[in-house]
Length: 55
Image 1 (tube, rainbow, N blue to C red):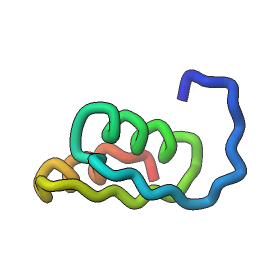
Image 2: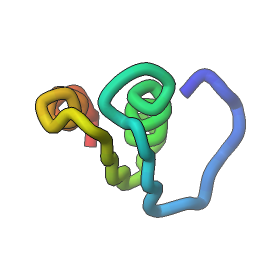
Image 3: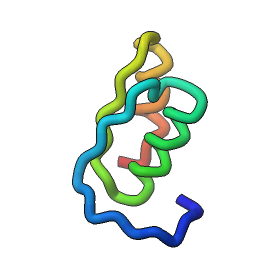
């Protein structure tokens, strides 16, 4: 996450997490230590994001 903003959130739900902005948000939140649940239309794309996620 390039922002200096801190979060106290422990979990986030990201819709459209398989590509584009949703994917970027999901990965950034995971990188900040947030447990992320993603949903979207293409299961294969969601699985790839899950593999890339640092958490």
